Image 1 (cartoon, one colour):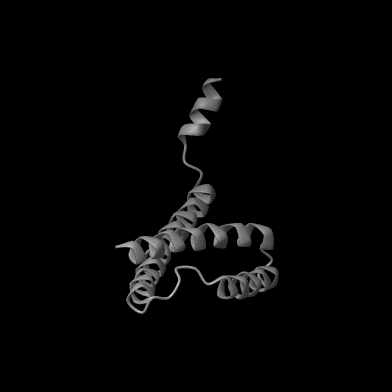
Image 2 (image 1 turned 90 degrees about the vertical axis):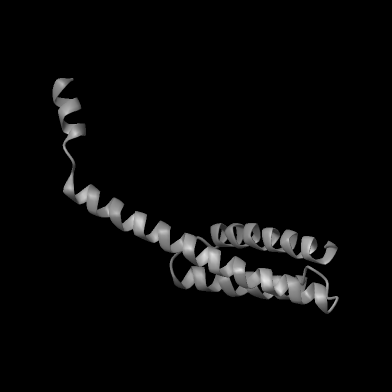
Length: 102
């Protein structure tokens, strides 16, 4: 057991390098999402100003199909990608609905 504790306290340089890369990617994802939401916030304000509906089902369907295709090309599960995009779209629509109400 003492050997197991010692091994877990000794940093594994390979694992540390992988984790550093993961941390960098996570940070980039957060920044990309923040920028995406800044832009969609402006879209919501514009839609409210010109009285367009908060949701655009045709656009959403095109985006989902496009990202599913990109996912397949990138060897990423398209089901996961669609769920992820749907989560983002639903949040954007909530923002747009708030902008339209306010």
